[in-house]
Length: 196
Image (tube, rainbow, N blue to C red; front, side, top):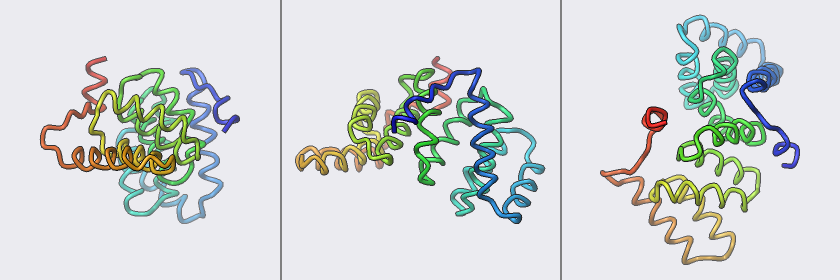
């Protein structure tokens, strides 16, 4: 974790980080996966289209192609925070939290009140086993959006590990309420960027 925390991304080195990530992903792909990814990239008109394809590929269980599309789109459009966030989220889901944390810390510095970024960063720390940082970040997410389903669920897991059964139940109840709340307080990525 110390090595991950030592990586400080700024606009001038963000693209180098994404390019190194893309190279590492390519090393783990077989020829068929590389060919499939190249075909997908050729069919996409914009980096955002390629990133969206990457997210969809994750849910189709084409994990390597998913990560390749997202990393490639991040290299093509390094200033797009939405692409960076989606790349980091899929890295988390693929068990590569140590690669997502630098991206998410960079995004947090740019969007300190964005609940999507905060939740993704909290999930990354949780996946790395850093319960204290996860708890701190998820609590800041919950101060902004108290019924955030994923943040509450992970806080439930942390409270349970800490032996705080009452807190655990409260977080679980909020997670469920947030999942089914018709008047959600969600600040979406696009709305937050418009708000500045």
